[in-house]
Length: 217
Image (cartoon, rainbow, N blue to C red):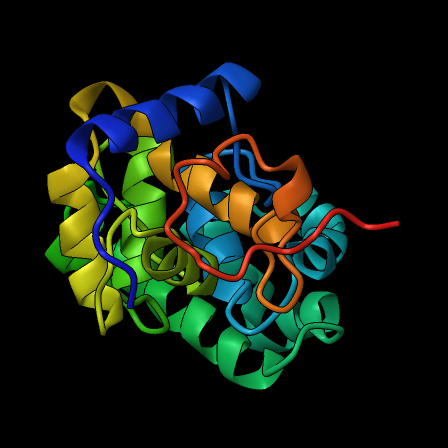
């Protein structure tokens, strides 16, 4: 595990990512907080592209929990059958929609604990929803962010939670709103798991990774 990046380098790291992409956004399509919640729940072990393809027609007809309940589990399955684990995901989406109707007036709550109690919604999903829908300063750590936190020295940690807590502590306040988007996109398109493209990385000189990829021929 590399040594942690210095406080000054962390600020420079984010500053460069911000300069390259001032207004980053997630790659899941949605129309409101509810459809965002559904999309993120569906994205587990699936690609954003695949989820967007499945929800394109779904979200034209369903944009609130009661409409999802009216559609029903079988109707939902017909839309999302191309997504992995669609049977379980459909069951969870119907169940969480019922809870939103029964306990939250059909609205998505800006409450971490309440979101995590919903079927199929874990800490990462709750963090994504609260950050994007409500502007909360959360850090949703996925495999990309876990890798970057450790590989670069930005926030080393042995567990997802350890990396999340470290990032929350080490990320300057002015970068918190977009931090997890910058890191996810950086991990998805540059700091890849098998072949990081270090030769075109804007923060390569700050990175503590000792086996940087050479410039391709």
